[in-house]
Image (cartoon, rainbow, N blue to C red):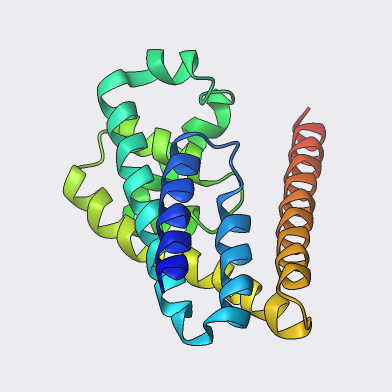
Length: 192
């Protein structure tokens, strides 16, 4: 039981840290923990989802606060702000549909940071952000835990499920990043 609580605590901390420092693969952490728990304590998957969602939520709140109070100057210094044209488009979408954009942003690899920046710079109210981000974090954690469960159930050894879940997450993220870049190139080529 102590090992399970320790694993869940570490998961929460890793995901919270990764939400602020976006180089940490938080989805892979949730998936790997779910795959491991499937073999050790299969009834604790709900706790994996809760720990992942809580970490994501806490990290998003910290990052949103940093963007709100630090502004674009801090975002540039931390290299969060890279594509200002994309940011302008996200701001427009947020003005039209705040809650749906915030909900979906967490599920799109690389979509969370531009939406957080746009929401902070556009002055989206704290209450709107806090309310919309909670189900987004839970949904995100459920999706990644399900990937881990699939990996854990397909392989007889826990480490195999963890490796499979992490590889799937990395491949999906790479494919979506490649697709997004290709779409940007074709869009800029068509307009130019």
